[in-house]
Length: 166
Image (tube, rainbow, N blue to C red; front, side, top):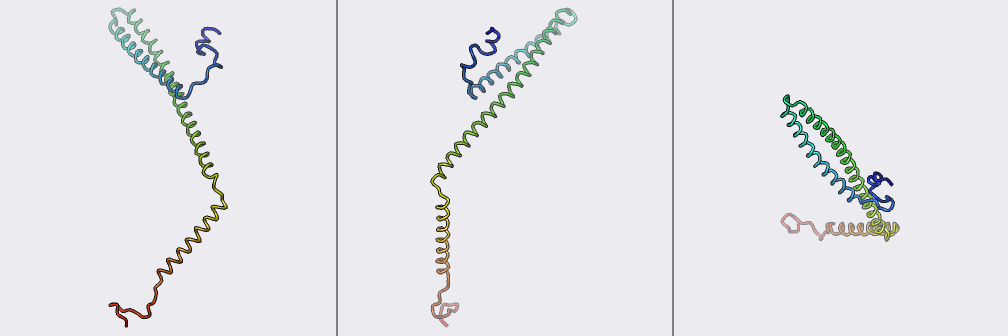
């Protein structure tokens, strides 16, 4: 394998190396974003210095001013490339975060389904139906008892407002 191929494939054979976890990949993407951010800051500083040099030389030393402007233009091109790379990395990081979230949601839903299955394993629809009928019967009996207690019972005579018999 050529040196260039090894560089882009990371060295040895890719079959012997397991895929990184989502957390590892996210960490590496964040590190890359941070590194590119620092490079952006560096290039922005260089652009400002070249611009200052071009102004300083101005009309006195046109050759030096033009060289400074060419370097500035080169730095701006690099900065534009880094901006595009950062956008791509941000998009990939967001996609990976979403994929990881979806994977976790799916795992948890699977666990919940297994838990529900275990809970329902001991339940029999016929037993549930019988239990519900028994509950309904007991509620009916309780209602009849309540109605029996709430009915007025005559004590042999009518009472007036003061409580004496008429």
